[in-house]
Amino acid sequence: MNIKNKLKFVWKVIVKIAQICFGIAFISGCWTVAYFFSYWLYNRIDWHPHHYVGQLINMLAALFIMGLMIQLIGWLFFHKKQKEVSNSLKDALRRISQGDFKVRLSFVRTDPRYQEILDEVNLMADGLEKLEALRQEFISDVSHEIQTPLTSISGFARALQNESLDVDTRNKYLRIIEGESTRLSKLSENLLRLASLDSEKHPFEPKRYRLDRQLGTLVLSCEPQWVGKSIELNADLDDVYVEADEDLLSQVWINLISNSIKFTPEGGQIDITLRHKDGLAEFRIQDTGIGIAEEQQQQIFERFFKADKARSRKIGGSGLGLSLVKKIVEMHHGTVAVESEIGKGSVFIVTLPVALPQL
Ligand SMILES: Nc1ncnc2c1ncn2[C@@H]1O[C@H](COP(=O)(O)OP(=O)(O)OP(=O)(O)O)[C@@H](O)[C@H]1O
Ligand SMILES: [Mg+2]
Image 1 (cartoon, rainbow, N blue to C red):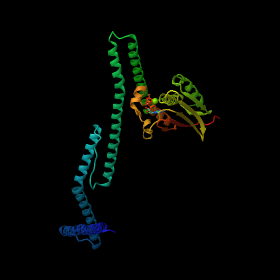
Image 2: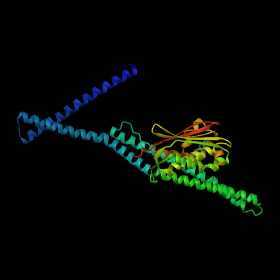
Image 3: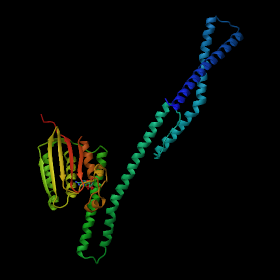
Image 4: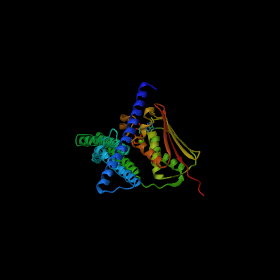
C-alpha cells in the first residue's frame, strides 16, 4: 500500500468514527430532549406513571423527535440540491424538445437515484445528437446529388436556346439532358425505395422460388450491357430454393451485376456462381474490374459513398445501390461481404438461408 492509499484509508476510518460518534450523540440528544420534556410534562399535568410506562413513553417520544430531526435535516440540506437537480433536468428536457441536443448534465455528489436519471438523459441527448448529425449529412448528400445534374440540365437547356447550334451539337446537349434526367429519376427512385424499406411498411412478400432461375433471367436481361463492353460473363448456378421476396431480391442481383459491369473495363471478365452450402445459398460475383481499396471496403455499403467520386460522376451512380443491397439482404437474414484488390478486381458474396424442403 503506497502512502496515498494509506492516507485515504486513514481518512475513511476517521470519517466512519466521526459518523458513529455523531450517530451516538444524535440518538442521545434526542433521548435526552424526550426525557426532560416528558419529565416537565408529567409535573405540569401532575401525573406520575409507573417507571416502565414512563420509559416506554420516553422511548417513543425520542423516536418521534429523531424522525422529526431527520426530516428537518433532510429538508435543510437536500431540498436545495433536489430543487437544483430537478430544475436542471426540466431545463435540459425542454432544450432537447426544442432540438438542442448538445445538452449534457453533470452533478457532483448527487443521490444515486438522480444520477441514474441524469445518465439516461445524457445518453438520450447523445443518441439524438448522433441522429441529427446523420440527418444533416443525409440532407447535404441528397442536395448535392440533386444539385449537380440540375446545374448541368439548366446549363445545357440555356445553351440550346442558341439558334446557331448545328444539329449534332444540339443532339449531344439533348442526350446530356436526357442522361442527367434519368440520373435524377433513378436517384429519387432509390431514395424512395430506401425510405420505404426504412419505414418497415414496405410490402414484404416472401415466397418459395428457384433462385438460380431468377439469376439466369437477370443475367440475360443485362446482356446488352456486358456484351456492349465486350465483357466475358460466366454463370454457374446450382439449383437452389429460397424463401424470399422475389422483387426485392431482384434489386440486389441487378445492383451487384450492374456494378460489376460498370466498374470492369472493356474486355474484362465476370464470374457468377450460386452454391448450396451448409443450409445456405451462396452467391458470388467476381469481376476483373478496378477493385476497391481495403480502407473503403466497409464504407461502400454506406449511403452515398462512392470510392472514386470523379469516376462515378462520369459513369453515373449516386452511391445508393450497395446500401439497398445490404438493407434487403439483412431483411432476409442474410449477409453481404466484399473482397477486393485495387487494379485486380472484386468479389461480392451474398449468403441467404435456403428454403425448407416442401412437404
Ligand atoms: N464491382 C465493383 N468494383 C469496384 N468498385 C465497386 C464495385 N461495386 C461497387 N464499387 C464501389 O462502391 C461504390 C458504391 O457502390 P453503389 O452501388 O452503392 O453506388 P454506385 O454504383 O456508385 O451508384 P448507384 O448504385 O446508386 O447507381 C461505387 O461508387 C464504387 O466506388
Ligand atoms: Mg451501384
